[in-house]
Image (spheres, rainbow, N blue to C red):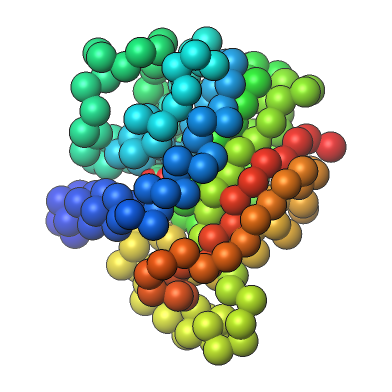
Length: 205
Ligand SMILES: C[S@@+](CC[C@H](N)C(=O)[O-])C[C@H]1O[C@@H](n2cnc3c(N)ncnc32)[C@H](O)[C@@H]1O
């Protein structure tokens, strides 16, 4: 791992994920999580303050990047719910089938190398009546913005730790065996090629 990936990239991702427009998105989706929860690609833990402690039995969070996790700003000992961090990749989840009531994934389906495999794993560990809560950026509906996304993506991906600007989030969810129950889509404030957001809930088919 190079100097950029180890020392610069984690700070860059942490700062980029802290902007107001993204924080507002977190406020919309994270309080919906309940029961035994798994968060995929927790990053620097920016969702942690938004969980509703009254609805949680336990929160388990995974991420392959310990460098990003080290940037966590909340005091984990003071979290008002049972919490565990595990270093793992979403494509190979170290959990038994049907373990979780809720799976949360925010701004990570853009980056996970094999998002399809990761979602199939999420479906495996989700209980039958469980719910996937997602909030992601992805493919823009406007031709001009999509062209920019396609043009910039090869460089962006290198600079932004593997993040893709134009993944088709609903299509990836549906191709991985999820049924979307509720979805909202819009540009949030910021650079439009990175700001077309999709958020909502899905259940396993
Ligand atoms: C843009 S950050 C988002 C972090 C966090 N979810 C948030 O909302 O702030 C993308 C995250 O995906 C994680 N990631 C990359 N590859 C992954 C994989 N194979 N499995 C799980 N997470 C992965 C990265 O380490 C990083 O934490």
